[in-house]
Image 1 (cartoon, rainbow, N blue to C red):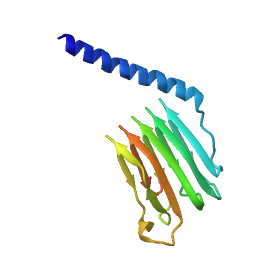
Image 2 (cartoon, helix red, strand yellow):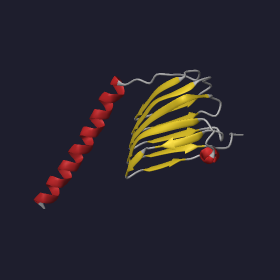
Image 3 (tube, rainbow, N blue to C red):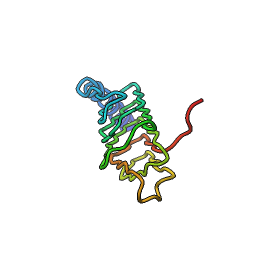
Image 4 (cartoon, rainbow, N blue to C red):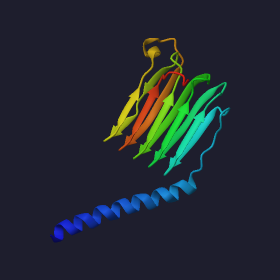
Length: 150
């Protein structure tokens, strides 16, 4: 019974530590970028972030979802050459909607999470390329086309 209590105390302590660390990170890393920004730095910790980009030369940026979610719509944005997006999730999720004419090149890794990154233009070598890199731990990243909401 003592071993069970020790394990339970360790797990509880670990989760409390993660939550406290997330609270500090939330204050230290504010989100940057708006609907017309060419580069984004979105942070969603214990909450959500939603953005519909109208950028004329989207170059990428970073997204961090820690016990939160990020929803970005890039269907009205124009992709700049060499665009690169870094995505990181921990117990959270990131959804990125892209035009069907973009190609997605993903090197995002997952640990007890999932990644779905593809568009109809993935087989078109002439399509503009959005490069993804990052990590999904106990969370997910979904990148691709979706129908316009009615």
